[in-house]
Image (cartoon, rainbow, N blue to C red; front, side, top):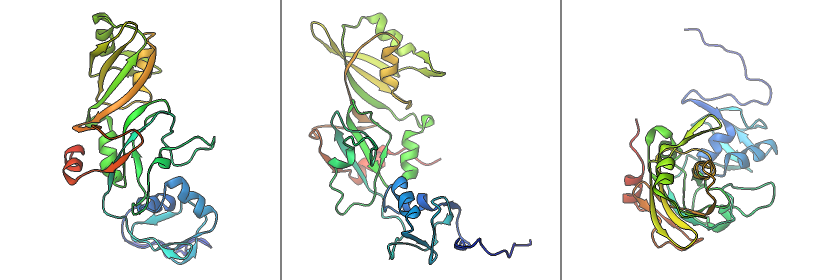
Length: 258
């Protein structure tokens, strides 16, 4: 086999020979230094050296064993897998930074001693409850992938008293914007005089799925809390608090590879 002996373009570091190539910003993020968007900003600012050369392209092809420095400090391979759970309050957005200046979930996490952790799925600003973070992107992808069918359990307060017909229609689902939205199960938790709490279980993740499903039936959502992912329950974790997952919880949570 003939290999090209062309030199890389000026300013572009030569890639090493081992491993698949990914964008430089993605590799920095996977090594647990910061988010991909933050890494891209560092690269564009000229603060990143790839194999001893300053690289300003966040998508520069990079291999897992390439040498990366940020502000002269070498960024080594990703840290051991770390998982935390947060009880997200209402009013926080699930992102590392927000161009509109809104509070983000990272303001609730004391990152001292932790690698960079990315959220596993999302909760919108108005939603509350269990939110996971990890630096194990492969396991996170398996949890959020529709084909994994990991159950997510929600408690939803609605602005009316449901009857059996409504619960059946929520289970049957609707077509919305080219997507089929349906709940795996729906049950009544408790009812007051004018509103009620439902338990809704989903086994695939679609953007704002519960809110869209209920809106299609003209049902007002008053509160929406995620209380469990798979066998991992929110439990007594205080609102706005977080904790590390145990090895047993991590093992039980993530579906097997393949």
